[in-house]
Amino acid sequence: MPEAYPVPAEGRDEYRNFVFPLGLTEDKWVRSLELRPSARAVVHHVLVFLDTTGDALKRDAQDPKPGYRGIINAGQRFLVAWAPGAGALTLPPDLAWHFPKGSSLVLQTHLHPSGKAEEEASTVRVKFAPGPPPFTYTTIQLPPVFSILRGLEIPPDEKAYTIRDSFVMPVDAMAFACGAHAHMLGRRMNLTATLPDGTQRILLKISDWDFAWQEQYLYTDRIPLPKGTRLDSEIVWDNSKDNPRNPTLPPVLVQWGEQTLDEMGSTVVAVIPKNAKDNEVLGKAIEEHIADQLVDLGTGKTTGPLPHGLNRAVDLLKGAAKFLDVNHDGVIDDTERLPLRSTVIGMGIPKAMRGSSP
Image 1 (cartoon, rainbow, N blue to C red):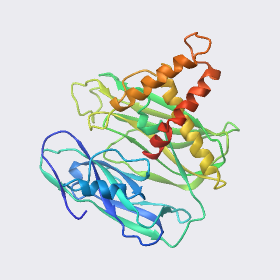
Image 2: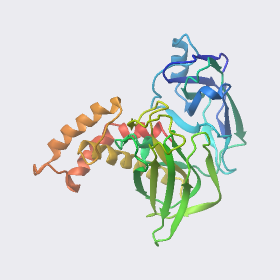
Image 3: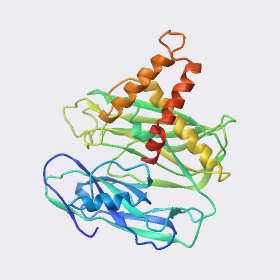
Image 4: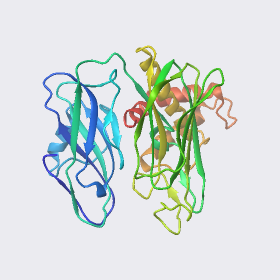
């Protein structure tokens, strides 16, 4: 960063987008990214995006302070996440990110006052690949967008608040990496694969989650995930006094949110489809999965509090559900559900949500 950003000793958490123009005069391929915050005590986590539109530079120029506030737009592609304990993310030799000429990196940085005034000035180390890789990959996040669509609400003294999610692979693929994310109350993270022949494989198992130690893990050997494989994710939070990492004692009600004392959670697996064209098929299936969870909210199958920005969209879905309830029985059956899912996809919400997360 050419200029440090001041973080006060006290106050609310802040999200700030810092822009790194790369000065590329031609397209490049990148194998490794390493983020190095200068004031780690105040950096809760960072999501790194690639901006090919020039929008981030314009917004940065309009703000007198380093970076800018606001959401990441749909034209900015997620690359990697950094959290305490993470090192460089280096892709295998046969994979790389495509960086078109004129691209910029955008670091969406969650800043958390530590009780001491700090100045944050991250640096990013980029390692280029010699040329285009032979393969491309897709990430599958379960539940999508860190469980934002699941009405997460953890009562005080609840020792094992659990959210599960499943996804069926629509194509043959190979898993090569995995990871997870939650805040302080996270306790256990599990991701398993059940192959079409019934064989089960553990893709990720974290029995004692520690927010201060988050990594993205590369498998020693790639794991085949044939078409029809079911991925099952389980996230468990512990909001009891017995959780040594619980930041609030006595425990209080905790809901989904981006502040340090809020919660969220998901597991992630990165896969290489057997055929390159199947990345598009897989991406469509992921967006349909997100759409199904939005439909569950609109039909009342999933209940619970939602972040403010989602309430209007869900209210629109509830109205659409009443309209599509052809037999007026108050229940959306499978036949009535399909047009509602198509409506959600047509609104572009699943595509935007997929683009803003791993």
